[in-house]
Each structure stands twice: as structure tokens, then as C-alpha cells.
Length: 448
Image 1: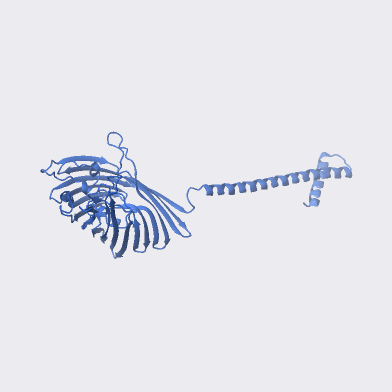
Image 2 (image 1 turned 45 degrees about the horizontal axis):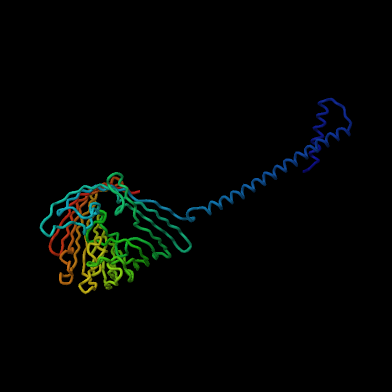
């Protein structure tokens, strides 16, 4: 600090003070007074400097504390930085009125949605009495969680999805407290553009989900492929290769749910041509069984290889579209029509025999106006069953299914829909006995 101007100022101040008070003083006294005032000013400046130092230290300490807190927050962050988290699903109420031509079904599951194999057929002694039922439920409502994270090795994403249908717990007496069930649970690594690896439970690679008709029924056509299962899928552009969980269901074997062979091997190719998107899929399966009805004795066992093909797609026709699927093979089995037919049968020699099966559907979706649309579909599925000489219970096996759906839907908002659907389905056995289902279904659905 420059002391001379300050001293001059104090001297002037002292002179004015002296003149104002009218008191006489020697030069030495005036200088002593000025030095005292200068000492006081120095003390004030030093005090201010110490305060500034303390303030700077406090600011520095606060800055370090902020950095530490930010680091703690980053370490405790529940998701990786840059992760996108999504939650969604829909709420749906289904009101279903059904008429069964040949009596009450043996399994109430068919009251919730169409399961072709559960349609009652006329008894061996003659025609049965019709049975009607009314059922309201919200079990098809679902929700999902997804994540997507961009990394230096590509995007890593995941999905888990639940709904409440097919619940083994709950009843309709008081609370309708149905359990949730796992639909999807998988991770996917997009390691390059158009290339990815998916591992977990999801739709079978053999099933082109985009071709499924826009029906109100939970599944829809009797001839559609419809399977979700654990798998590892490799996608390279339009080509998909998958290794999927194997399970065998055979006529004539009580213990047929265990599988010790190779997994199901599936290849699928997806392509587009203008407004037409289509896919062709091939599958190779090993069917196997071991009779364990007597655990102390090694039972009969066998394995057999089979195949299946599926061609499906969607053709946009202006605002409308046409959806289709055709399936054929000797090992379609559980993959088609909610296991409408089993994978094969065990003959009198204990050997597995496969059966040729085919099925499919065609569905037309028509837009009447921006808020009104309809879907009309027809579907069938058939199997070439063995004769009674090869399989004792052949006459009682299902040989054919048919179904038709016609709906009218009103959508005041893209996420809100009210619709009604007429459903007819028929099941026929090898011996000629049959039964049919007539149904009206109303649904109110809101997606979020």
C-alpha cells in the first residue's frame, strides 16, 4: 500500500480537525496523532486481508465438497450414465360371451381366449347339450420395462414384460387376485449396424409376429405359429439364426416333458418389396422321450428328427393391409395353434413317428375412417394322423381346426380403443366327431 497519499490525507484531516476544534497543538503532537491513526488504518487493512483469506478458504472447501458430493452421486447412480429407461404397457378389459355346441369345456382357460384344442366335441354316444358362459376379466393387461445404453462397443438394451393371464393362482369369488407371469426377459447387444445378439426369453425366431392379425382375441387364428421361449439369436441384416429351448409332446407317452437332445435350430430370412414385408423360416428339431412311469426300471425311449417351414408377411394396400401365414412340416407340433397337435406319437414298437401337419391364415384389415377399422380373418390347421393299427388312440385325435374372426374397432385416440369381435371356431376329431364355439368379445384398451 502507498503510505504517502494516505499520510497526506490524514494530515489534512488532522489539520481540519484542529481548525474545527480551535485547539492549539505542537507539530510533534500532530505527527504523533497522525501516526496513531495510520497504525489503526494498518490494523483495519490487515483484518480485512485475513477476512478475505478466510472467505477464499471457505469457497475452496465448498468447491471440494461439491466435487465430492457429485462423485458420490455418480457412484450411487442407479443406471449407467446415458441409459434410457422406458416403462409402458396397456390396461385392457375383456367381456366375453361364449356358446359351446357340445357342452361345458373341461378347462376354463378357453373362457379367457380361444384355445383350439379345448373346444368340446360331441360325446361318443351322441350329440351333447350346448353350454353358454359370460366372462369379464382384465388379465391380458400388461406392463414392461426396457433399458438402452449407448457404449463404445454398441448399444446394449434389455426388456422384461409381465401380464396376468394363464395365472395358476386366483379366483373370481372376491378379489380376482391373479398372479403376474413372465412374457419376455432378454438382453440384446447391437454390436454393429444391422447386427445383434439377443439372449433370453422372447418370441420364437420361427414366428413372424408382425404378420399376426389385429384381432381382439388374445391369440387369434387356429393356424398361426405362436411360441415364446428362451433362446440365443444372432441377427445379421435380414438373416436370423437361433438356438432355442427344446420340448417334446407326444401322443401315447405320459412322461414326455423332459428333453435330453439338441435344442431347436431355426433360421429365418426377412425381406421387403415395396409395401410387402415377408419372411421365410426353417426349423430342425429333435423329438425325444423316455418313459419314466416306473422309476425303478429303465423305460422305453427313442429320438427322432423333424422339420418345419413357415412363410408369412404383411402387404400394405393404402391404409389397409393383408396379413398371411402358411406353415408346413412333420414337427410343427407345439409351435402351431397353441399346441393344437402334438409333435408326433409313439407307435406300438415304442418308436417315435412324426405326422405331416399344415396350417395358416389370411386376414384383411380395412380402415373405414381415421377412427374406425375392422379385421376379417380365416384360418385352418390339419394333420395327417396315423391309423388305429399304428396308434391305438388314433380315432380320438384332433384332425382339423377352423376359425373366423370379424371385428369393428373405434379409436378416438391412437392409444385408446373400444372394439367388438365375432369369433367362430370348430374342432374335428379323426373319427368325425366335432364341436364348435361361437363367441362375442368386447374389449376396452388403453396403452401407456
